[in-house]
Image (cartoon, rainbow, N blue to C red; front, top):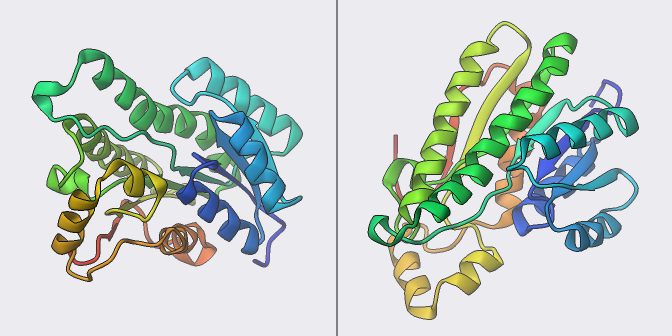
Length: 246
């Protein structure tokens, strides 16, 4: 990167996908703010990634916590140039088994948190006339999911709508907003929450015959974060091994 070191905020940074994204952005020359609700796991990731990261634990589903955290980041690190809304929780329950509590919890983390952080980080990006917002969507957003439940699929479809809306609002500001929609990244969530029979059934449906690697997901995020991706906005980048073409 030719410009001064920029600051990226990655949520869900204690997880496999978030850690891969953070590592990649550090390699690309960013100072990375690692955000997660799990402080102990977050501190461990920060220790592994080294001095170009700043861990901060908070609950993204709480607007007050988000506002306090962004204020702290602004004071101690600086304004966020790249926001990666990666944090999320999975629900496999279909409509009949979904409780109101589960519905609200999944939407609060997967959708509300992304909205809150965009709202808080966007003004500084617009002021600097440069910014990247990258949301983590899912194949479930377009398909209703293979094993994913109703609430999860709906939350990711809403992320697509949020991506389009923010992209439309920021067209002339130097800020872009895109999303990556993977299907079955090889994470503990996939390996542990699916039994052997379910994993085999899913693999049989993926045309390329394997799960997406976390580093492949991170590479897509790094591409959209690049200064050379400024002509791409409002895009949902599918990463599903050929499950669906559009």
